[in-house]
Length: 272
Image (cartoon, rainbow, N blue to C red):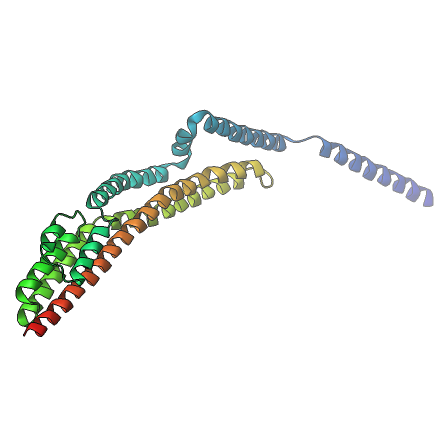
């Protein structure tokens, strides 16, 4: 009985050892799934290298619009809408010399000293958009004295004209602000959609996480975010510059018109 038990134990040990040996040998040979996985990784790396070569050879824009999809075209459309608006606004403000209020400041300095003869006519010839309204206020204040009912009507009229002028100056700036705000969001949307596709491809693969496949999908998805930020940044800067010019004109008008009304009323009372 002991001999039979000993022989059975030896055979059992031999079978276990043989099974372990075959398992170890099998682990050294990649199966078909692992081979396919390696091929997928190699293809992903090759595609990434090819894309990098294409971008270095001048094909970045074709790569951007090919990989970015519809979101990239939307961002490009926003840029195409904003560029002519920005160009027209720059030309308009430069023609008006809105960033050069020195002549108006010099005219107001003359007004403070009491030298108002011919001042309204000189202001009419200044290109700055605030100059005609200031000239109108000076002429009407000198004529009516800016007191009583006439003064109240003059204040209302100058306020109405100032509001109209500022609306005209600020026209279409909201479009640039909208583009600056929405372009990064569209870029982020494209990145999220690209990440979904990338993770979906990795999830459908065999085995664990494919780093190369995931990295390839991520950098393609990030193209839309980079493009959205690149479009939004200049429009954001231009909108801020234009708004600052409009605000400066508003402050200039408020100061000049208030000074004209107060000074004219004081002179009229002193004469009366």
